[in-house]
Length: 293
Image (cartoon, rainbow, N blue to C red):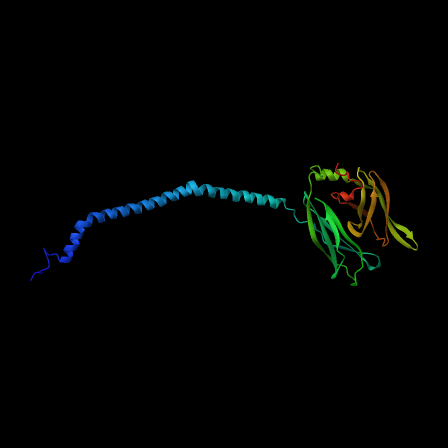
């Protein structure tokens, strides 16, 4: 028997659904179209915002960041190139002196054209530290750093090491050197050593000693409270003895006869090398305060 609750083959529920669709289908389609349009609008809005942000907002800012990074790299490179480079230190030379004492020395080389350094240093001989002393090295200069007459407690000690502490770098003031440190140095430091001789037959008491003689000429217009002279005796190109003397109150244009005694009288001395040292960038080194003019 046909279902009494069906009409035209449709159940009551299907009829209700069909009736609802007839009444509301247009609204549903409209809502769907509206939702689809809204979704498209959102997607297109997101895309347009991305393009706007990329080319109009974020791009200038990010391009500035890239430029700033590049500039910072240049600044860092400039700072790095302007930073003082480390000094070079030679191997320690050790020489036997009188009364079983040791003379020790190193050469410190400063490669920087616009920086000079002050420092403290000491030598170590077979585990024994020498007293802490002060030194300096001028721009693009070499400095002989010595410890003379040290009597080690360890018998037969002949090797030593060298340690630097408390390095303090100073930039050369362009005003003080009139823009050029090499010209400043050439004008203020012109010492000559004339008639350098070595006499191994000098007798003192009943002992023969050696003596280095020369004339020190200050061929500049500047005088110094004290100039250190590092004197090396050489044989066949090798240093066999070393000594340091301080010349005090050296006047401009002065000529002074110097005689340096070597109690050990090293045999076979063929040459005498003399190296003058004074801190040209220290106002206290000069006899007057007018050294910058």
